[in-house]
Image (cartoon, rainbow, N blue to C red):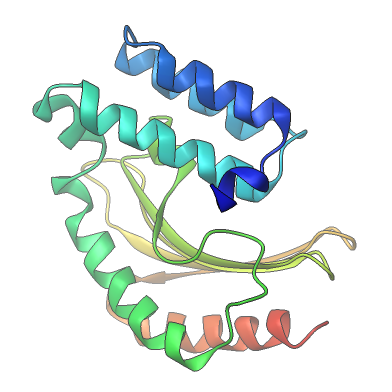
Amino acid sequence: METEQKLSDKVLKIKNILEENKDWKIVEVQNFYNNVNNNKDITDFEREYLADICLKIIKERFPPKKSRRILNSKSTEAKVLLEEIWNIISKEYDWSKSTVKLGVKPSGHMIGGKIYVGWYISYKNGVTKTNTGIDYIKEKEESEPYLKVDYRELKNDLNESKTFPVQLKDDALILYRGYLTKVINNN
């Protein structure tokens, strides 16, 4: 209930539409999510909240083969690697002021079918409008996965991004720690 108090009326209506419709086709859920993801009138927190509902619908209402194609077996490596990183950094930093959901989250591009695998961890400082994230991305089934670390200052339209082969996760983590320190201490 506390979460729903942080949601706008518009997002609560969308939530109801998503949960009440029992006849979704998987492509419709993906398209619905893509529309929500592109909506500039909702917060990042609301966007992630709706992404969770879309994931729940996909897991609960579609045959395991279809939902696994989007969510599960192809994502195991990504989730394990990012959970390992999350277990380290969640203890090293104060995440209490992040304005987005904490932990390992599915990418909207994966839910929407634009990439094969996408999971991430992010921190957003709502005061300074800065954020940073570390993503595990595999664009196509046959492509090699990689890690992407980025830092954004929305007020200055600054976006720094660097990619790493998965084998260089320690290097990616060093850069992410630097960005986390910058974002968290930049109040």
